[in-house]
Image (cartoon, rainbow, N blue to C red):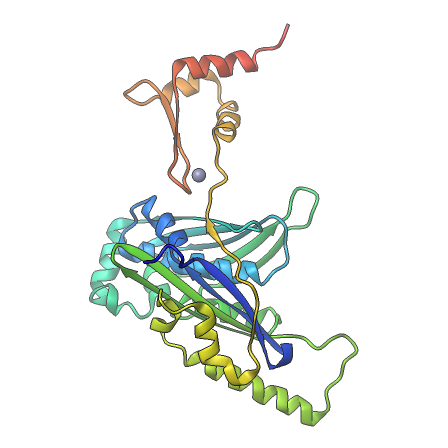
Length: 316
Ligand SMILES: [Zn+2]
């Protein structure tokens, strides 16, 4: 692959003079890095990659300054997936699963390729929730929907239907090829009329027709087109919407990024009495904390723990 090709991108666009807006998201390095940090089994990697691209699609459609989190909690083999996306474009993710139940579910389906109903088979019953955290002085915005349907896109559709949000269509695709994961997502939304605007019955019908056309065109895109590294996102959009007055905007570039740091771990460890920290030591005699998102290891030697104690001691 040429260095000039930027694979991870979000291309926002509009069609039909802005009546409908959307975005095409491609994640390559981002999902490959998230998955490789944990060495997740294939079905877990697949659901995590799909959750990551859905999170980026949803996050990018909101105006926020902070952290967007998409998370599932369920009773199936994969009991939890968390992906968060900062307004700066940092994406990270983690999954919790039961390996024995996972293997049993894949075996029952006749292999991972035969897993059509991924959500019920791998995640089971539960919910999908998202929150937007913009800091301590602000309201947390939260949306929640049951895990219904075969795929995460089905769950997202159910959410938009129930919550009286904008009419929304989403399509997602993932592939594991040559040791790398790639994921893509395409979203189309029907924009509200400007406040005070009013459509005649005839115009209303025209817009309705145009929306249906847009959704049908979107549905015609193949997984291969969505994912092909040699097919730029703007070309995919042009293929689909060239007759609908497509206007594509400058791409944004999401990337893998974790907010963990040694300072944060020190703050967390400082909550524990020294005697308790002593019980956490490994055979090598260090306390080792790993970030659950990026798997970065933070070791603390006796000298480090002594220094933390000295910081905690009342200053003379
Ligand atoms: Zn981390």
